Length: 120
Image (cartoon, rainbow, N blue to C red; front, top):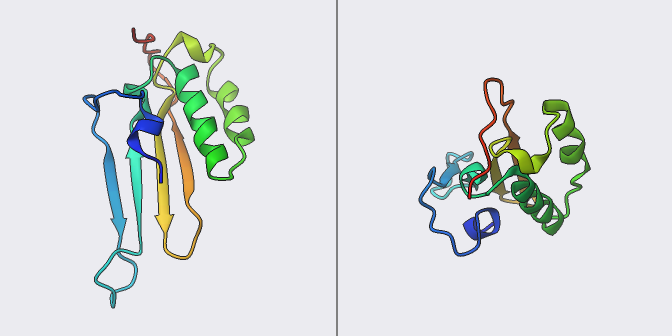
């Protein structure tokens, strides 16, 4: 499972956007969920997108997923360096579904109107 601390700054209070969890109830005969997803708004817990990218790549690797598609996608959304803003990588979400290996989703933002400056 992706702990909030793996996606957020180590030892940080989760005081920005809230962590979100979703439960899947796919079998009407079951009282328990068949899966769940934990969404971490990494854009509020990283100083800049370079830091968020490092966390995403580490978590993808930890769960046996290839980070290459993420690394190829970023330049198609922006020409800036990841260290020059925060918010391009919006959320990291880990889904657990009964009978399947965990999967990580990285949500990207288009920055259509502005680039949020790095935080201190």
